[in-house]
Amino acid sequence: MGGAVPILSRRQAVLPRRSRRTQAGSAARRGSVHNGRVTAQEWTARRPPPDTSSWCTADLATSFDRRAAEYARLRPGYPNAAVSAAVPEGTVRVLDVAAGTGKLTAALLGRRHRVLAVEPLAGMLAELHRRHPSAAAVAGTAERLPIRHSCIDAVTVAQAFHWFDQRRALDEMARVLRPGGTLALVWNHDDERDPMVRDVEAALDRIGRPAGGSTGRGHGRNAADGTAHSGTAQGAGHQSGPTQWSAQQDTAIAGSPRTDPTPGDPPPGDPPRRPPFGNHPDLTDPELIETTWQRRMSIDDFIALQHTYSYVILASDEVRTRLDAELRNIVGSHVGGGDAVTLPVTCQVWRSVRR
Image (tube, rainbow, N blue to C red; front, side, top):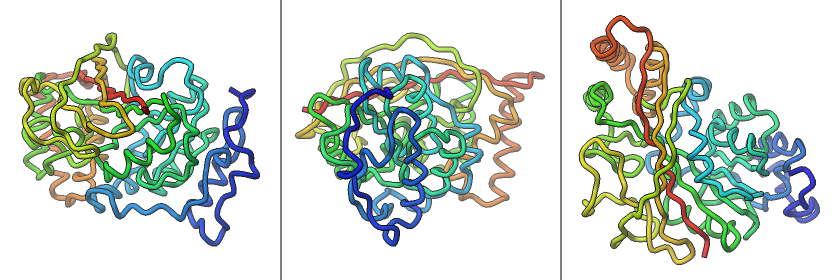
């Protein structure tokens, strides 16, 4: 969209002085390289350095910086159908919040949207710049976005909403969206109806995986990072078309994670279908679009993937060694003498509209 009119003029988009930028300023300067799509300065507003203190568990939330390169190599992107569901056709200006190493950012850039990525962790942001040097990306948090009011057509959050102070983050994302703009919360989930996936999930429970996570699926077994553990490895994929659900809404408080049982919850092993938020004054209750797909990866990469999850990163060497051995035994019992695994995944897109 190189011919598009800039969202803000460079004169309007004044950034804080160098003394107040620290790492955020360095990231903003890298993001200013114009690739014919957007520069970071066009959208950024005067804001202090990012503050991650509101994230749900600081040690877990910041642990990914220790494995940024492995995260980028082993975590997946998202199926094309899910990306299409997340960002409607004709959308121009997209803000990718908590972009990590750029898994979703890359797909959005490939569709020629004008994209700005925001990421709070310096190591993850550096890896994003290294892998996607043309991407405009700045340091910032979902609760205090360095973006001007009502200038964004679509906001995306992939595999990260569960880390936010959700009430504050929803208010911020509504603030930067134009009326009629869309918010898409995206998660990959393993299909726990698969016997091998169930065995892997049980092994992760045994090393002390915290309860909670993305949308509270399963029986309190999810990791605090809510990611689709065994199903989110980088590799060749196969996907089906999206399915749209009429998600039941009840008494969810705006911005609050849902943990209460809801009539119509899926059977054990199915991905969650409880809305991640509801009743927000500026955002419609989200609708769910699902895409089922498969991923194939080597056994070694599958085991290495587990080391990119927060609670495994923070585990002791002894625990990680024990987990690796157990996972290798589990995979071997299911695939026999093969050297790769195929894993079923459901990608969920919860899409809301700015009122």
